[in-house]
Image 1 (cartoon, helix red, strand yellow):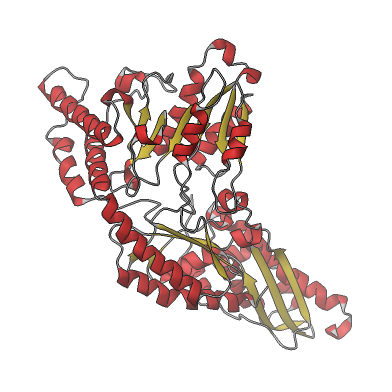
Image 2 (image 1 turned 45 degrees about the horizontal axis):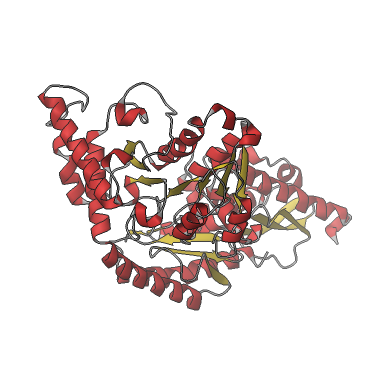
Length: 128
Length: 393
């Protein structure tokens, strides 16, 4: 039974990539809630059909922070169609796996990406 | 990297004197204490000497001491054993009532939950914002058919000490013919508080060796003479038939030695550890904004300093401290495995979103001032880094 964090998880937790606000983001979404302990805000800057930039803010545990960080790395520079296909399994695999009790955190990261893209699309062409 | 252990409430390092006391009983004096030959007698003598030692510390008769597997098994035996010994007529659900608190360790809480699932009536006492049981609420909860009351000596998460002597007096003073038996889980206190069962007025008390410098895998259950307790496991005459199975001679010898040392030095432990704990509490409250101490401000164990840090998640704090070599624990959901934050903090009225940000530092006899200074140097930046990461979400 895997109960420990991988080195990759710890690396992304201790040195999160793409953290902070993103001025000029045109797709933004907040998922999770404080009651369950994890909240994640995803900022995307989308140009045409490509994710130009992705940043995040996360209040949460080690898994929540590392999956947020990994998710932004995985969608940066990718077409929207690819970003939409990002699954929690893919994020967990990219981190060399997550303890079984932490899988729900990776669900949150994948959902944050999806919702941020939906936010962009709901604003119509160009995301304005 | 420096390594600083501040999780003594989880477990303690075994003392060198204890290892020394245990050593002959692994390979040299390895006999089964139940065997009649010289090997067995040697082991039997060691077990009974240990029992005498423990009985002296607890101020009771050796026959009142049962050696068990862990604190958890002692708790199970105490609670289920009392129920198993009830007379047939008391056993119907409406003829039998049990009382405990909502802040017990899971070893106690889950045992009562099990009994509840079997149809027994159980009252879970609430606590005030400091984690103290309300004696008036207890008084009201006692019924003519209340057979057992179980209240922990001190809470392991926040360090609040419960009024055990007062509870005992209250139970003795009930006008009902049936006086409820009184059990206390004393797992958290052995290095700091009295274990005199006469003074405390308890009928049953549980202890686990690894919390006071002894080995893991051995515990104590004190059962006052005349308290009906029936076995919950079966297979032999060992420990009065109440904890069947070959006695763990080395562990029992080690536990007795550890308890002796812990109790002998408790006054010294108290003043030394309390001083460092207060330095830590003061330092944290001054250096870290938006945090507060949990548990009672004064009526608390010398070794526990537990906090809530708003706007961060406990596991993240724990892992960042760990990366600096500092070992602590957290009551956050993410460290519990069941996605709920500490039941103790919630019962104390701490909002769920704040309970996720709880961190417990627990000091020990080896803790130094320099270690506390190191924590006070590292912690504020960790909290502010994590708050930056969340951007105030």
